[in-house]
Length: 281
Image 1: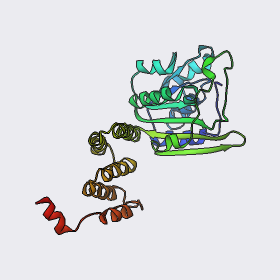
Image 2: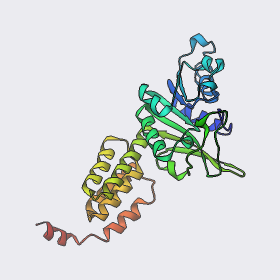
Image 3: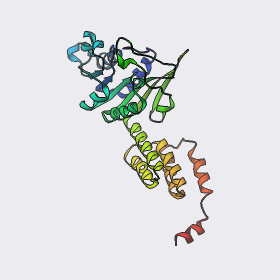
Image 4: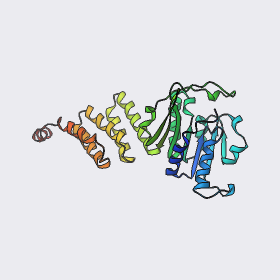
């Protein structure tokens, strides 16, 4: 449908207030509810700019079904691009925030994952994803719109590792609905971990380690990436290197309870200091 649950709006507002973007791309804008919320919040409320000619937020949208677009959306959005978002997004520039509201379930999973990668490439701050999380959220073609069909089903676990924050809502009879704040750097860490998984599966462990180390050297610290790297190093027998990275992690995440027991367990695998000295001599 060209609309969605209102229950996600407080979470969306909280994320936007934290980010305070100056440009937003709303994908699958439908009736324009999310765009109206963003415009009212950022221009009118926080910017104190109630007159249209004074608005400063760059707010664009993509909509696959042109019949949904009417005068009220044109009044709120600066530019509305018509077409399949998977292709249209290749023609746009970068935005601080990209809203992906009730979109992924309309794509097959492989295509949806590739589309999220594109969204990450086109945002400077974050992707805010809202999505139903149950196989009970079914939908066929409606309004003579083939894009309305649900073609994939998701779980919260599909997104939690790439989202800094998220909110899950429970709906009786159909299951959960989630809104996820995926900052660009967290998503890039997710991409690095995914690449490392592929390389390790292709029996290229050194390349997998290099991919994770590159992410940790170039991006802000990320606990999931660090733990995956340590685990990969342990499986290669590089115990000292794994301990090194875990100690780096303790510096960045001093309150993380899993790191010290992990280090202690690895220390038990280390040979005595004199043995290590003889082996390295």
